[in-house]
Amino acid sequence: MKISVTVNGVVHESDVEPRTLLVHYVREVVGLTGTNIGCDTSSCGACSVHVNGEAVKSCTMLAVQADGQSITTIEGMATDGVLHPMQQAFMENHGLQCGYCTPGMVMAATSLLKENPNPTEEEVRLGLEGNLCRCTGYHNIVKSVLAAAAGQ
Amino acid sequence: MIPAAFDYVRAGSAAEAISLIGQHGDEAKFLAGGHSLLPLMKLRLAAPSVLVDIGRVSDLSYIKDAGDHIAIGALTRHMDVETSAVLQEHVPLLAHAAGHVGDPQVRHRGTIGGSIAHADPASDLPATTLALGATYIAQGPNGTREIAAADFYQGFLESALAADEMLTEIRVPKMQGAGWSFQKFNRRAQDWAIVGVAAWRRNGDSGVALVNMGSTPILATSVSGALAQGASVSDAAQLAAEEAEPQSDLNASPEYRVHLAKVLVRRALEAASA
Image (cartoon, rainbow over all chains, first blue to last red; front, top):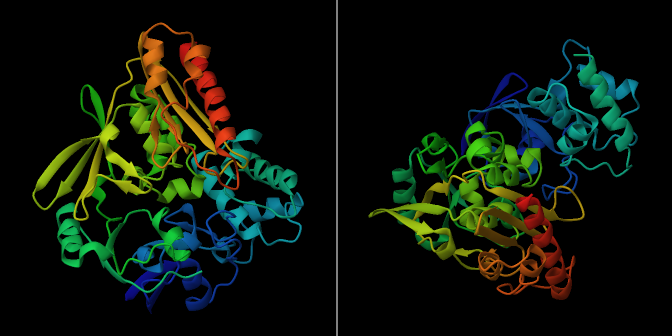
């Protein structure tokens, strides 16, 4: 099926099988491999991207469902070589260890701040309930998100 | 994991969706937010040959004050149910429970109608709308009909919907100031409930429904009956599992679930009575 998807501001016209998952489309068709596949069961959040500005798990959405929609991946966060404030906050607060969950954490955290610009620590923890860090580095992840919120 | 191959068609309206599903027969499934169906398809536990995508039938996404009840379009997303000022005022139990479905990413995609039509006894909103005495509206080739939530759930992942019927609206009575509580017991925040309880109470009236305590969501009628007779909360809670037939799984034995149900019903009723 032919689909037209805006990925990080660029329109991509592709012919995909209906069963193609959005995460496979992003990684293999568009060629953006910053979005990781973790659990592949909509549990871990590593594959989170924005669909029309909201975080979703791209392993649990079909590429054909994204036809005509706007997708943002981790590659679309920095502008002109300057990190997104959330990326910068993760860097400054040691919000990543192995880094595997980080793209999904950044996408979920930016979506969270859009809905709740001044979250409490508890609200950040609840807001990131859909993202797992196997390094268990949650303390500094939460600290990073709070720092990004304070810096807005 | 990749689903088995299927054909994909997109419907622009409920009528078109019903026509499309009728053309394709029993092997076709409606796709709304996809957060119940796609995981099953990835595990190859479901392999429909056709998906009729109703995700863009935008006129079925609404929350309306309809006098004695609130009418919710079947394609209203969990996030919109959770944050609805109308529901927070008139049906706070449902808004609160919607905020406990999955996680924010899931709530951005999943829909109330999809969750109810999927009829998973472990899901939060089937039991919550059952406790609230909701009515579901189904549209088929010959028009619409009302189905009481109490008559809707017929078996594990089985509902009263015919193959060519689509759930279009959920009507939930206003709670009129009733006390309420939603208890969800699980090990990780985003998980399904090992046992969950949705409860409300107003004078002698009450509604109590159980999540993951049988092959369908369970209405704990014995608890409400005892409360109506004047039983104490702790005595009524002892009847929590009278209607239940809990399963064993990795998380819990049936005996543990029965114990949890009694404890959680007591906590829910204490909160709802405060």
